[in-house]
Amino acid sequence: MQKLFLTGVLIFLLTPFINSQNTNSNITGEFFTGDINTITTAVPFLMIAPDSRAGAMGDVGVATSPDANSMHWNPAKYAFAEEDMSLSISYTPWLRQLVNDINLAYVSGYKKMDKRQVIGVSLLYFSLGDITFTDNNGSTIGQFKPNEFSLDGAYSRLFGEHLSGSVSLRYIYSNLTGGQFVQGIQSHAGQAVSADVSTFYTKEIQMGDRDGNMAFGLNISNIGSKISYTENQERDFIPINLRLGAALTTEMDDYNKLTFAMDINRLMVPTPPVYDGIGREPENIIAGKDPNVSIPVGMFRSFNDAPGVIMADSTRNVFKEEMREMNYAVGAEYWYSDQFAIRGGYFYEHETKGNRKYFTLGLGLRLKVFGLDFAYLIPQKQNNPLANTLRFTLIFNFDGLKNETN
Image 1 (cartoon, rainbow, N blue to C red):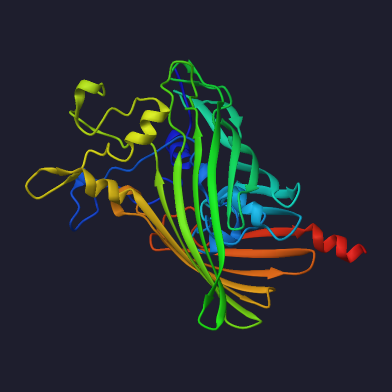
Image 2: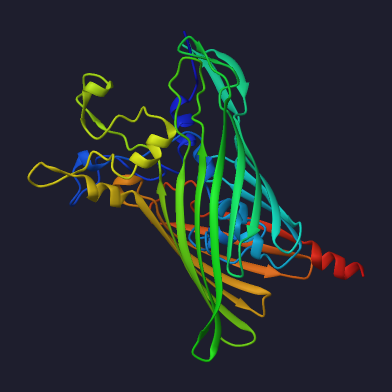
């Protein structure tokens, strides 16, 4: 029987976003060991913030102003983009404090078809470095570079002066083993298809004697098929996610502009139940609900399927655990003369649901043809895969290029 070398490392790499913080029984205070119940899915790379603007604002993006990277956050924003065509390229080192060959690359852009319709495309590529496979005797049986990617296309349309909507399609490919045998079973690349449905509302407002803008966004992403890496393995949910948020912008004068934004995220997949320790069949569940359900059932049931927080009287509070499954992101962005930006933000996830908590900082620069964004993450916990890592995004404005050549 063959096995994978560094299987534990691979598992860690497969769940860097959902379970990137300390989720063991060392959590003290009001939390019982039984409260710790993180939600894990396949292909968690789909939930990593790919661009440096949002990454510098605490991973906020569903209601901020549109740019080339709106595909990930809310493609409906494309309908309100000012430029006719724009493209961005982003690069994110991953686990840079441990290895130097794991990274996330992202290319995204859009093109206006007319005043009301926009199409967008993106490619998200996650390289997990070089992995050595061994057999039970420790002998090397091969080398492989695991990788995952998603290819997206979106159609965005204006529904009125202030409202837009979008539908996106996504193809997901995840090759983690290169066809190696795992416990005598041959593995294969996982594949899935999914869709996003999003909407965006924006309106100019007056804030005393100052002009301003308020915006609201909603995006249900990765609504799609389950994924599997072997023929006889149960298929796993991909990270179906509900993201909603708001943004408020005030123009302090002709040169200075300030935006505050907030996003709320919640995975719409089953919460792991509590089993009796004998088996993992439905009859062995002592709290919660059976996670082996269809995609529509899993999505709707996700709002009321948690086993519940253990209370002092040994009862379980389901509502309290459901509320813990939401995470929050807040961010701010200051622009001077629409050319130079300073950004900051904070991300919060409950201790029993992943415990990701971090501050972010970043800068932005816009010229006529291109722009640069930088982001830096400062974790409250030291095991964040992006800890003290500099990320960057390069943005091209083709309208500016046309103006330069004319």
